[in-house]
Image (cartoon, helix red, strand yellow):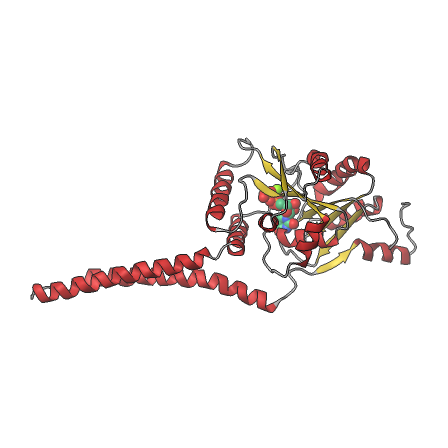
Length: 327
Ligand code: UDP
Ligand code: MG
């Protein structure tokens, strides 16, 4: 491998983005040309709509396009990690493949990096019209909650559109964590960060893959990766319910002693049992969340499996007589 190391890498996770690959590749190539050495790394996250063929076509046409393809869908955050491991640039930009992260911002990101920022984060400006009100509200509330209980501060409107210096990428690539919430992990590192704002672009092909369930998954990962406070909440709740139960005990003993013909409170017993049952389930649920993660960490499984990369394709094309496009 005697190709020069690219200065700028752009990493794009793509899950069923077939129609976005070619226009995105063309637009990025145009934008990155002035920077000289660049590469574009697509991560096909188990797509079923021809995204991989679109990536093949793009990679065949432009040797600066590289890719990783997963054997199945492993999720956005895993695709980001694979892309960061595959990228070779001195600066690596991660962005969505669906045009919601405007590529036109790249020169600004690179300029901030050249001025010395190790991390250049981006933030959606408030008041964007096209973002569903519900998503905008829940995302704002979520970052506020994470700020209050977690060990990172993520400004509302943050997303996984950012530029990372090689030194930061190397640290991420060495992390042994199974659960990574990239935008949180990067801020937790504490490198000097510059923030560039943008207004969100419109998805031009396909639809959002973040169903409610995936959003909840990502939200829980963010909290569990950055806070153990929920465990403490469980303890406080348990204490509160124990105090309540103790008061109830005193009340029943006193009424038994002072009011001889008292029918002992069936209703209060039942409701107490119900309340305690609920509290125990809640606490168990919270503990289970962390225990499950401990189990996954202990297993130490790979978090994704790579099916093929551009290296496999290029060697097999050479073997069957295709010539590599001129570099
Ligand atoms: N994505 C992925 N794997 C998934 C889901 C999404 O690689 O399992 C990619 C997707 O192709 C896009 C980015 O992650 O490039 C953001 O996903 P999406 O647009 O669905 O999320 P939203 O913008 O609605 O938050
Ligand atoms: Mg999107």
